[in-house]
Image (cartoon, rainbow, N blue to C red; front, side, top):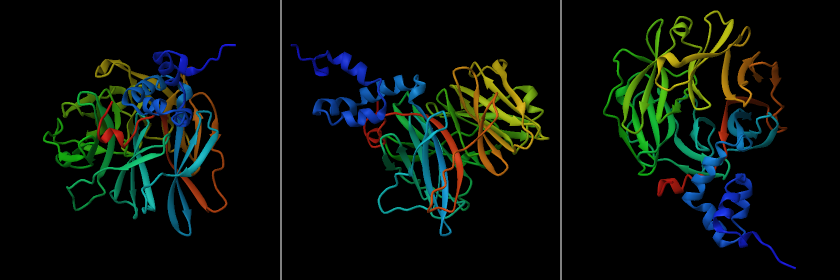
Length: 376
């Protein structure tokens, strides 16, 4: 009788098999042997796994950021679910030792890594910035900027990967003065002020949900020249230059300051807005990046009674998952379906929970600690 084992297979076949497994399984398989631990922990394998996982919808998860109040104090917790909206895990954020924040928010995610800001007082610049992989439960504290301002409540942050330098970078954008913008190289751990200014001097930046949209190696946000003229401002993290991305003209006539946001769906830059009378939600996508004529209206649905609608994901059949504020509750719907009540997340020891934000992300093995030394 012949005894068969996985280790008897050629190494390239073993790598191919393992690279298609979910992160939870791979974290356990690191204990199989020293060689498997070395393989799964390698930069090559992490990148190969990420490239495959990003194309596999089954390895994409929904992360829900909540703020929970107990005894008058707020605590940030994180929930995980599949895209079917069935809750799988509820747990607290993996914070550094001896640090218990009262407030926090997730700024963005990139390659399964989340940029998180934590603080002990509301409406302030974060006391610390974390780079967190919820799949591996690994966290690092990013260096704090040496630059300070009188009003520190005017910044937002974004995380992106710069393929030209093989480095993750954090962009810190001032809401009113782009001469104060800064960038952090995660690999070197150093902040520096940006030398260039944006293309126009009279642009007012708008950060509705304080999210910077990262696509094609550049961050994007909405800028207002003067009512009703809006533009999308982009910042390329490789050559560190700003550029204007014009909006579709029909959308410019209907946008409002409070309800217009830039985002990314399925690798495409998009802008979504609610008509000034709150009756209709519109979603436009740029099918060919940088080409004004490629803007296309993807979705128009009624929005009466829904003050805020945020597109989060496009399914394979073209339906869009929408996160909505409805009657002071956060609910979900698809572009063709009814509202879906969010499952009850209130635990016995907590008086009230409120959802801060929702992210669709790809589970990855990317190590926050490893990328500060040697990347991909």
